Image (tube, rainbow over the protein chains, first blue to last red):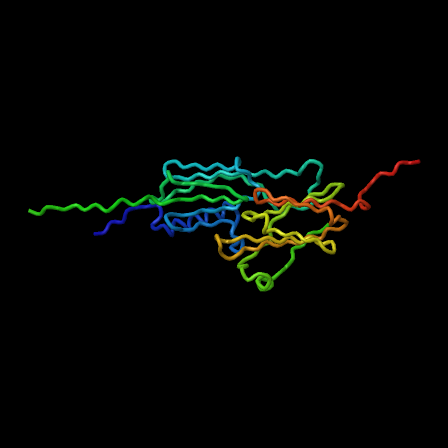
Length: 139
Length: 118
């Protein structure tokens, strides 16, 4: 009988779709013509991207603990001194999100950068140990 | 002052640049004081050299592009604003952390001023 090992996500692809959905809800990019968030499989791991225009580096916190990636970001909107608001479309941001990483991601190797309002988190895969051969003696 | 989205079809955009694969109108905030307007537009992931601002017939047109993937097709950001009584010669803009700040000073003749009684 085959026993399936219980994992939170049965495949990396399923995990990716789940993360994309969560990130879309989080950053409000449900409209696919406007690529506000994306998660891509790439050589040696995954790359997670989120648009955070107007968010300075010190307003973003990323941490990993017990296989869970936590992303925190905030942006406050205030009317500049001496001005009156005429039209508003941008929204304030305050978020905390936790994502469970799949087993193949190496938490030690995660790197993040924020450039031009674009957050990129690289999630590298662990190096796979060489397969070990065990010879079983048959009497 | 009014804002309007320039409606351009995908085909029109692609005829301008065949590299453009998708487009959107970036969210903006607009502020005003006695001296002029300040417009904030979200342009995440856009480089300074890929932004253009044109002002003609009281219309300010914002165009920006950025690659969807590294070296891949482009995502275009387009927006147009009707700005009445603005001094086109003194428009200025700054891009920081993916946020574009446009300063549009009003023409001196349209600025409210108090006239002292003789």
